Image (cartoon, rainbow, N blue to C red; front, side, top):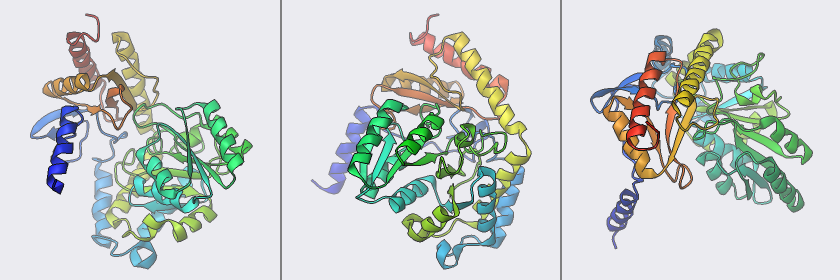
Length: 397
């Protein structure tokens, strides 16, 4: 068979399984509303948790950043590291309570680059089974002995740490701080205790925690700060700039030694053109806004609490999530796609998540909330969901 024949066959199989993914075209980055394929919809699928992707101050900062150049022109280590990059890294280190930070072009590159720099075939990586794909791929590409444990299962984690210890070599424990498809948090304090007991290093992916949660001292720092973990307890922290920060790119934060090491050995950092100055300037402005306007996080917390209270009153099948990610697990791919299409017909854009992104039998609507949503927006969505699920026989009338 030719290449095209093989590809068409595999694509046909995916369509038959109702797993085929299709692009939606928006005219601009969504606020709570957006024009999608020419039609205005109320958006509950964005990771722009604080509504900063459309803030005038952030856009203005990006425009000003472009005056430094349309692109960085080379990798950071050649001549692509500009003053705006330096300032962004300093700001990230400050708000995360770490000694230093290193920016990457994406969270995927940050996770793969860090894991592959830290580990080799003689080492071990212990991972939660529901980790993000970038952590999974980093584990595979590193060549390290990969050991996995059931989601948030501390006993399972300890068993794998014991196996890793008996094998020898360094051990890295990699987990999401907030899980992107379930919205629940890792028990980081307990995981850090296990890591200390077995002399393992803890790496936390803060993609969905950075900017929206933290501690009194470090309110932006994410789930690690919320759990009270120091740099010593969580020595490797990855965060993205494309979610709560409303921009693009990512970072690793940790000790000065860690950042110096990654600068020398993280191949996706070394061999990639530096982050564009406009993106760096926009990200810096957004982080400063989050720091200076704590009411943004407050509004998001209010919206999450309101959504959960009303959804539970209506009998919707919520998961145990206190984050902006509120999944409704419907199980069947056909049901999820039917409900998502019906929601879109009624004016709502909600993510329909199916395998392989989530395990078989756990297809879901992934509802994401933003500080920019109004209570009226949430009520409209819940009313539509209640009626659609009642008509489908999922809820009692």
